[in-house]
Length: 326
Image (cartoon, rainbow, N blue to C red; front, side, top):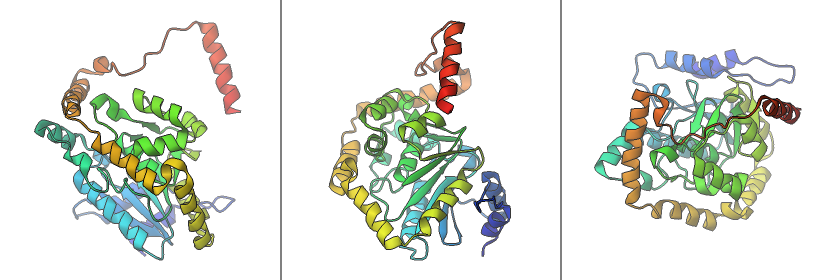
């Protein structure tokens, strides 16, 4: 057993129902100790019993995906799929955020070259997102799960979201199109109208709404996404896998946009309809984003401004919110 997994198991507190509680901070600290003196890896793979844990490890970049990380993630998932001893996996982000999308520095370099080649990688720009995974993968979402990070989460079978996490296609403000199956999977998950609004506005989606519209499966306390995702993975892996995989694959085949021919055509359309105008939009979007970091929020014209409402209406809204919680 590796030192990393040993520390994870040491940190697992058994509740009355026997569930694990694994802290993302514990994972980060354990891994930083295990990698001391060695070059940092951007994708970490470990096993908790027969569950494969795949961690995005670019904490300083909020686990944004560069070309190297995308390649490592694709390899890690392929190895998990080929591992007969591991029926279910968990994908998570180390350091407080799941994934902030494509790496901004590489995106800027591509924009300066006038290139969109990063969108045209065979399996996907942020990982193996242009195909169905051969095994169930559970996503543990913490912090920011935005842009290509949300497309990665949608690639997974199930999603466990912390109550303070944020979802959204923030790439809208940068002029970067969706290219990793997001348009296909989001519509299948939440319906055409919800998907179009989420994609068109690029707004933030918080945990309550995400759970209500079916974008995530479970909402959990902050700091517990990984542990709860592992719990969910174990609850799936305890069943006979032959019949479970049969039923899972039947859902993928029969659920309209998810059937293989339809999915492949739709994901192909996603990248083949990219135009040269998008390069200009992307160049301007990156400049605007960098200026906003320097000058502050004056350039956030994409944000939806809250209208002024009277106090009595605010009180009514709070009452409605309380009713929804109960």
